[in-house]
Every structure is written in C-alpha cells, then in structure tokens.
Length: 81
Image (tube, rainbow, N blue to C red):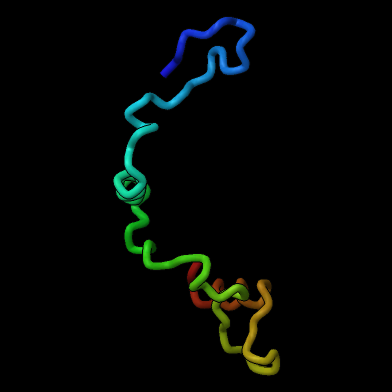
C-alpha cells in the first residue's frame, strides 16, 4: 500500500503494510506465515533446542565426526545429491 506523502519525505514512494496487517494479532500472523511457508512440521524446533554443532555422523578415527568434505563424499557415494 502506498501512502500519499510529500516528495521530500523519507518514506515517499515506499510500500508500507496496511493498518489491518499492522494490527493483526501475533498468534494469527504466526499461524498464517507457517501455513504459507509449508514449514509446519518444523515448528517444534527452536534455536534453543538445536545442537550448536549440528548432527554428528559416525566415522572411524575422527571421534565420531565427519568433516563437511567427508560427509559430502559419503552422501554422493550413497546416491543422494
């Protein structure tokens, strides 16, 4: 939505959300965005609950961790992209 403003106004010509979007409740907005994003199955994850180092794959001699390069080699060998 564009709001008529003077040419010298910093927001002149910029798109701005309408009043109905600005007053939309947070829970309604979150639900609407989850449906649009198709990420509903991932809503149970939060940054607080995730492991900072990521998932660890087993590899002999590396303490159970794969380097990114070794992981990619293993993934390609298994037939996944």
